[in-house]
Length: 385
Ligand SMILES: [Zn+2]
Image (cartoon, rainbow, N blue to C red; front, top):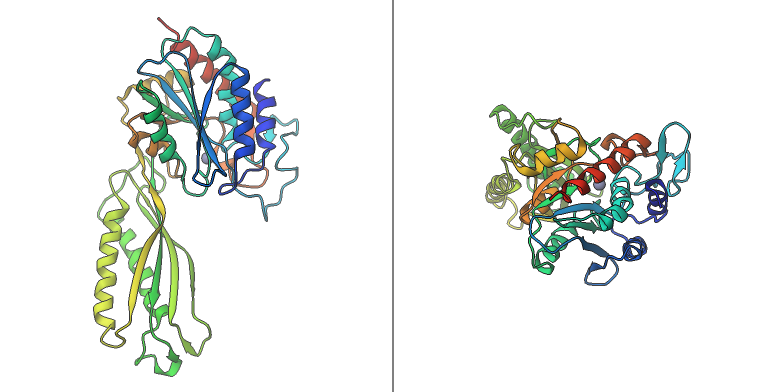
């Protein structure tokens, strides 16, 4: 199968983040097995989802992991002009489908290169590492990384995460953390606003604190020019609370995310926020002793990526991609998790992130061909004596 045929098969599995991916992962496992390579599944506890890893080549240190995810984002409510789960060639140089760009295009390049990898006299191994639930918070990668570290007696050295970067080697990625804050106040008639504590009024104060926290980081010069925006961002994306205009709200909840530049951690911001919340509790318990603010982490934090330009993976990726432009991205990806697992990590893959997650997602055929050339260069490099 050529890369387009493989991509067409991969996009036909409508596996969304959070759903069972066994259909697509078993198809991939069988495809790999047909080329004489055994792979290992890393299932979730309920056995409804699995990541996959395998090694091609000798069991020696210094190999490279090629990482991709098998899930995609929903199409609901989007205005598609073709079936999102059928690869459509509109004769405009592009191939349309959900996941064509993010990131089954890269997975297809890996699988299309497999016959070459198997034939090549590799002196360092190449690994595939395909995960699930990336789109709902990079949930599976930590376990997959651990499984790889435990399973192989040799130590892989590099990891290339094929998120769409237009084949630009990408060395920086922001970290992300998602929180929920629940404010518990007292209820009562709205005329008694000074005798009760409105959870909504207090939640709004906390939200404004978070916004000014972000602004103070910018003013303090805590920026990283590689990113757009160049600072840690804090955003409140959902608020709910209250039952009627004339009833003081007993509860108000809001969800927020922090996208950190590599020099900052969400923990620093959370600690300061919690301290502010504690000071509000001290104050308002004088009015209503049950007043409470609780913040929980509703997704495990996804670490950022901060690979240095002099690390060997950077030179190698430039060479494989035939591209000397280095980049940094503000979206979350699994690269920071692979870096934490001990691998020199980088993001580089076909397609443009601007085309991801939207109606009529597509990948340029030229990008897909570029991805295949990348694989050929990589195989040649790891076959040199
Ligand atoms: Zn992705």
